[in-house]
Length: 383
Image (cartoon, one colour):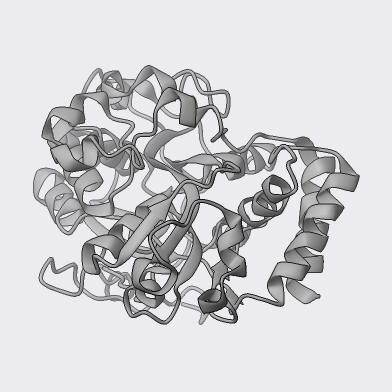
C-alpha cells in the first residue's frame, strides 16, 4: 500500500461528532481498508440484470460487502451509513471533500478506489466528457420511481442515465442578524462596515463568478468573454473587502467569526439550527440552483453495492431523514410526507416558481467557456 492510497480510518459510530456539506469539522466515518489490504482499484463488476433486488441480494451476490463513499463534508444524516449497513451487510468507508475540484482531481487520477461520489450537476458534465463515470443499471434502482419529475427530466442528465440526485439547494447569503441587522437582501451587504475584512465568498469558480456576474446584471451562465472578465474584476475588488475565499462556512458563521458569507442554502440552514442569530437570504440580484448527484466512478471496485446504496437512499423515510439532517431540498417526492413541516414549508428551502426563475441551474457551457471561467477564477484567486 502506497502513502497515496493509505487512508486513516475509523469505525462508523453514530455517537461520534455529527457528520451531516462542507464545514471546518471534517468528520469522517470509515471502515478500515488497511486491515483488509484493500489498497488498489479493482475492475468494476458487471451490473446484475435481476429485477428490483433487495440491498443484500444486490451486494452479497456480486460484490464483497464493502462500499467506498466520497462525499461533501457536513452532508449526511447520522444514521444513513449505519442504516445501510444494517439493511445490506455492506460496510462503508466514508471520506469527505470540500470542493468539486478536489473531487475531480481524485477521481481523474484513477487511483482513488471510490465506488460512489457526489459531484454537483455542472461537474457531472465534465466527468462525462472525461469518461469518468459508469452508466447506471436502472434494474438495480427500482426506487427511481420516487424522484420528482424535475429531477428525472433535467438537462444535466435526462433520464438519470448516469446520476441520481442526492440533494438540491440554492446559493445565497448567510449572515449574522446581530452584526448586520435583519434586512440583508443582496450583494450590497458586502459594503456594510461590520462585514469588512470578515466576510467570505465560495471557493468554487462558477458559484463565485456568478456573484460577480449577477452583481453586474449579467446572466450567471453567460459565455461572453468580456462579461466573465468584468465579473473577475468585480470579484478582485470585492476580495479587498472580504476576509477570505472559503466554502467551509458553518463553524465560522455559528461562532460569530464571519458575519456574512456567500453560502449554499443547506449550510446556512445548518448554521441557523446551531445559532438562531444566523439567517439566509436569496439575493434580489438572483443566484443559482444546483443539484448534487450520486455517481459511480468508472473504476469502482464495488459498483453493485453503489447501486444498492442509491436505491436505499431513495427509500422515502431514508430520504426524509437525509433532508431533515442536511437542511437541503429533497428530490424525493415520496419522502416529503416524512420531512419536517417547517423545512418543507420554508420558501428559502423550497422557493416559489417565481423565485426559481431567478435561480437557474448551472449550465454546461462547453469546454471553451469553462476554460474562460477557469482562467478568470485563477485571476481572482491569485490576484
